Image (cartoon, rainbow, N blue to C red; front, side, top):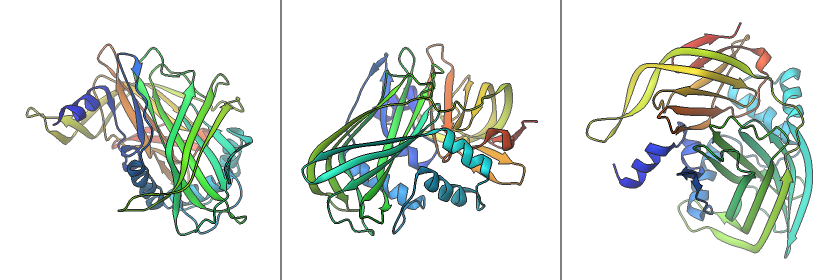
Length: 338
C-alpha cells in the first residue's frame, strides 16, 4: 500500500460508496487543514457518479423539494409522504443570491441544511446549454465557517455538477457538501456560513479534456440560518455484524465480516453517527420504514480520534422523517426503534 493511501487510511477514511470516493476531501492532520481546488479530472469523475445516480434530467424546474421528491422515488420506488415533504421544507431556506461575471450569471437558489450535510441548488445563465451535456466549474471551493471540525480530527468533501437544463435555459447544478465532525457540531444550529467560490465555467467531457466555455469568478457567503433542527434519536450502544475493511499483516486491504461494537449512536433526518474502537469502513446503514421502504446511506466517512477510537458518520441521499422510521439496519443487524 503506497504511503499516500496509508496516510489517508490512518487519518480520514473515504466513503463506503463510490460517490464519496471521488468527493473533494479536506483532511485534518495535527489539526492543520489542507485545502485544494477541484480539478477538471476529478470533476469529470464526480459528474459521472451524479449521472449514474439517476439525477440528470433533460429539463428541470421547481425547487430543491422537487429534486428530493424525485430522489425519494429513485431510492424507495414509492411516493414521498406529506410528513417527509414537511421535514425537507423545514430544513430548506431560500437564498436567491446572484453574481455576474462577463456574460454568465450564477444564482444560488436555495439550500437544505442538516447536521453534517448541505445541498445547494445553483442556476447558471448565459451560454446556450445543451441538455445532453454536463457542466460544472474548473475551480470549486466550498467551506463551512467557522470550521465545525476545529479542535478535533475530521474533514469534509463536496461535489458539484449539472443535473439538467431549466425551462428558461439555465444550467441547473447541485452542490452536495458532507462532513465528518467528531466534535458533535451541527452546521444547522444557526452559527455557520457557507463560503462558495467558483472559477471558470466548463463543459465536461468523459474521457477527454474539459472545455472552458466562460472564464470568470463567482463567490458567495451564505449564512446558514436555522430553520428547524432535526429530532435526534440517541442509542447508547449496539453490537452489529457486517462487512468491514481491514489492513492485513502484509499491509493489503481486505474485506472481512465480523461483529462491531457501536456506542453513542445518533440518528437524525440527514444521517447517522457513532463511535467504535476500530475502523468499520464499508459498514452499510439503512433506515427502514413501517411500509417496508428503505433509504440507504450514500456518503460518509470515518476519523480516528486522539484516544485511538473512531468516529463515523454517514448521510442519507435525501432528508427523512425520523419519526416514521421503525428500525435502523447497520451492517447485517437490524436495530428496532420502538
